[in-house]
Length: 198
Image (cartoon, rainbow, N blue to C red; front, side, top):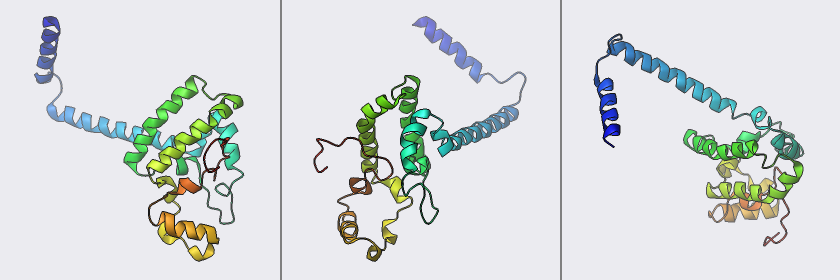
């Protein structure tokens, strides 16, 4: 313990000692420039990992869920507005985005160890994976859905009677959120046998 204390004391002495070769101004400016470079590199990497191209670079995503997305209105429609993977699975706000990226590190772990590297493995875990995503969307009040679908601007007169009734009551009262009714809207539903209401 004394050896560790002595080592820390010596190290602290080095940190307190003025630099022999560089001025404080040079070190401060160097630290500022290094900070800008780090921040720029960090944001660049964050944005590059927030693209559809990055998402489907893994065959697990490209060959399973991305193929399904191509058959939905979120991929191709009359207006030409298309949702990409990050639009639905990554929050837009910076703090929420960072939290989601930290959660996604578990997905990298799964990639390394081949958790869903075959179609059969994916289908076996499909419901569990979907339930995690549904729970995330339920917990954040379907924040990613609301990036494009703003409840305040819905024209209930152009919706079906059922949709209009649900949107004007359950959603308006805060009793439900988008994902409660719209599971499987962009990807096929997993086997839902044994789930109440399906």
